Image (cartoon, rainbow, N blue to C red; front, side, top):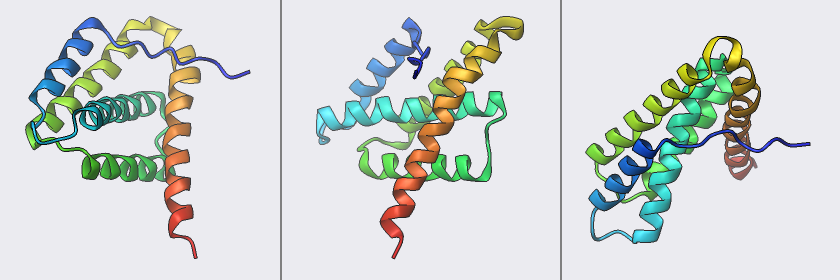
Length: 133
């Protein structure tokens, strides 16, 4: 049985994301840009979770780098917006780690941490299968 993600962004995080979406260049496709901002935030959050949980391996890091590169190439956002998304995702991971208290992070790592690891490995596998002869 697959467990649902326990990742729930705080109200401050949602407000930040809304502000970042509004700050995105007007020439971009609004729906795609909003989606990319959310996906970028999730990638930065997931990496923070995987790092806290000790799940960063060469393969996980490679999946993170590949996914991040893909999202940044397909998002119409400036460097400052990307920086704010990165900081927000990292801060949220830090907040969630602190929020789970002593020992409570074990369940968080078993759910959100493993999910983050799977997402990076899955993206990596998909990327590698495209380039395989």
